[in-house]
Length: 447
Image: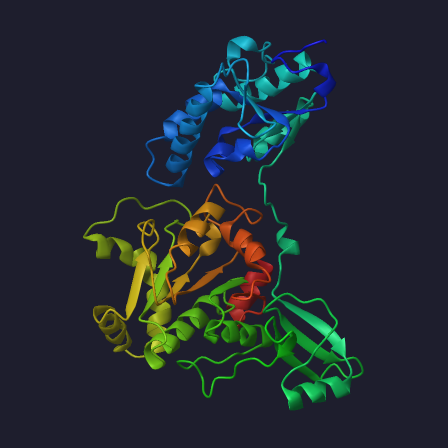
């Protein structure tokens, strides 16, 4: 039998050869497990770059250390230069040194790690023409350069979701006028239309679009049921459009323990979530505390270290949340004092997500603002902190992402929306109509 480089028979030459960039590993430390039947090649330049991140305290450092430990386990099983097979997998892992590769094109800077990674793909393509060689990188410019040199290059994410195809959380269906009347009368409507659990429904009269009804599909009842109606406004907040009515319904429903709200700036995501949390915590006593948190990512250039103790350092980051709380408390100078009083009493807690790992959070209304800046792993870390009786609410705008390692397709918020879709204790609403002000709505649409 004829063998090629790495000891794989040519009969398997249709296997892919994957060259992995550093940013893929920093995004997902387990990325090399996601390629199935393939030969995964890791250039020595990637190992060098990963080493620079191993002391980072954030997500990049954690992924760098986890990847290095995994590769060290493989190293104990054989020569990485010759290829080591991952247990219970068809994947072979190789570490490629620059000495093993053909010469780099003269116009590329040999000192640049990206170019050496591209050269690995070029060399493999020349050495193994019967293989499909593919460069996986989240670096757009590297993908462009790869295309110029005839190398197939793709972005990485095992769970990429087109934001245009993102689950909206509601659906419009056409029904007869008699069915709408019956829904108002009987408080339920059974339909043949395929709906997800807790998906919201706009039922419209086919002959008169102004004759309509809204509801939520209940898995328990196997029917569309009416929304929860608050007796009065919630801390001065009431729904101004149908999407906000959907959002308030899932925020106030005790049977729904996970809520995700996605929408552009000014649609009321955070304000409604905090209002509902205050109502369920202070007015109804359903939860012991309202906990509001957000990741710390600056918009634009960071201003550097901040003076003072931890509370003073966090004030600029948490100010958007304080603004919403004070707005709900009242439009007077005493609002800030009332908010601080709730904090002193332990009923309201506003904190960063930095120290959430390892915690258990029972019987709390947990709001995670700006969740679009989180990775799927970070979302998992946060949601798995929820103890008994805790409700988790994620809010964010996938069009405003400040984390350089996340985009709208692989944001943890997008990932959570799709993964929780249809589960009986989860609901999602996409908000599109801005209600902050006429100027804010115009800016969100045209800028």
